[in-house]
Image (cartoon, rainbow over all chains, first blue to last red; front, top):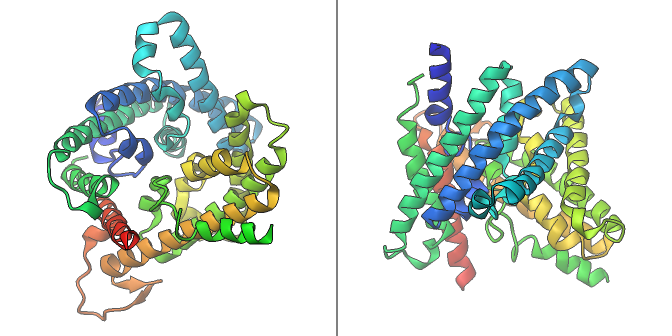
Amino acid sequence: MTDYILLIVGCIFVNNILLMQYLGNCPFLGVSKKMETAVGMAMAVIFVLVMAGAITWIVDIYLLKTFGLEYLRTLSFILVIASLVQFVEMFLRKSIPGLYAGLGIFLPLITTNCAVMGVCLINIMEEYSFTQALVASFSYAVGFGLALVLFAGVRERIILARVPKPLQDTSIGLVTAGMLSLAFFAFKGMV
Amino acid sequence: MAKTAVQEFTKGLWAEIPPFRLVLGLCPVLAVTKTVENGIGMGVATTFVLICSNILISLLRNVIPKKVRIACFIVVIATFVTVVELVMQAFAYPLFLKLGIFIPLIVVNCIVLGRAEAFAAKNGVVASFADGLGIGVGFTLSLTALAIVREILGNGTFYDIPVFGPTFEPFSFMVQAPGAFVCLGLMLCIMNMLGKK
């Protein structure tokens, strides 16, 4: 049990996917200008990442490892993620239109979100068991969401501040992300 | 024709240099620029994938149906990334270990897919090759520039050679995650200032 708690804390705070492992930065800067879009993106990532983590783990252990096809890992993982995203999108549109309206535009973006692919690869590299992989995927996704929402909150305030012209927009965004990353640095050594 | 190809090439070096002008593909930029060697290695790998995928997608642009084009592009890109992965494992194993997860992640680098969608799917082979080369070289230059700043300040070395002598106290901030963000943000600011003139 303690192992899992350590894993969860480690994935959410200590090894935060966005601020410590530098994965998924494009949507981080892209959708963080408004709180609503940030929350939407965070939800979509949590939803897809847990499913992708589980499916890629099964594919890797039962297909690639069994038949000695590890060199096809990159190709098969991205195909799994792309088709999963497509499938989730169609499923949501048909059966849960409310959720689809909320997540809609963020779903296609997830295919090229390196956080998703990155976590799937980390699961394999760390040789997690199936439950560990599932827990890790969920915690990484929560960490992503947490960082994204925090950052969106800060960014909404920055709009009100007077920023020098060359620093505006992405530039100040990156510096802010650095400060946020510094805050997350405090969790280092906790686990 | 030759002239336009040159234009496509040079545009990648300044007017559309990633990741400063095209703010895409930030993850490898932040993650691998701790040392100059890693930065150049990543840049070269990405350039190779960019050129090859641009050429192939440009050749196939009339065959690929519009509706499934993104999936097709991803398959093409993933194939070349696998090639890079295997070649690096065979000939540059230490570098492969250092870059680790970021080699397979070239697949989801938005620059590669972005160029496929925005350029190679609409233009001829020569122009697409020039575009891929230009953007790739531009990307390598930016990575190297960022890596030089971070390695010199963060480690006090350049390509593993000490620059400041033994009394220098390195800013370990620069090689850690926060330093990467701040450093890239400030470089973007400098680029904006130069661009305004």
